Length: 214
Ligand SMILES: Nc1ncnc2c1ncn2[C@@H]1O[C@H](COP(=O)(O)OP(=O)(O)OP(=O)(O)O)[C@@H](O)[C@H]1O
Ligand SMILES: [Mg+2]
Image (tube, rainbow, N blue to C red; front, side, top):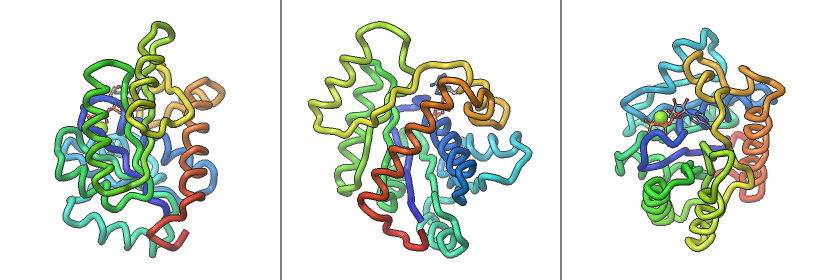
């Protein structure tokens, strides 16, 4: 089982959006996927309540139970686990980073978000976990994307080779228990998610998972 943790100290950058979209993508491509919701706001769990389907599985997990729950999931046949971390709570981000095979750090291309991303990156590096920054809610124009990509390069961080643009399909999906690729299967958001999903698999396959039962 591969474990992908989605972490950012900054709120509202797309952690839950990426977790739900990647879990749905894995499920659509025939991998058993589950979301482990570490966030006391329980956004992913609420998403599941409006979804009306038990796939992908979503479980609200008390942080102290995380490694136990992941082990049980791997033994139960889960192949692609996503941890949706809360903003701000540093200790919970630590818990998630510790057990992850890959950490995704979403950020918007904006100054305050980049500062939050930098702090999150430092935390993830403390554990030596493989990570990648994901640019989310990109504007269609302006120099912010280029500036942010340059800041990420200077930090020596990996950047996922896909920009997730600001698109109505993402926000509409979140409200209706869907993922953007289900709202608009032939849309641009669907393509972005599929590219991000393939990138995670490439990284994970290259390094091997630590939780077995792949
Ligand atoms: N690429 C995008 N385009 C448009 N809207 C987006 C995009 N990504 C996320 N959103 C919207 O932005 C809002 C915040 O996203 P989300 O809840 O995924 O962030 P989060 O990082 O999980 O927030 P929190 O820190 O509160 O857990 C949601 O309304 C979501 O639908
Ligand atoms: Mg969230």
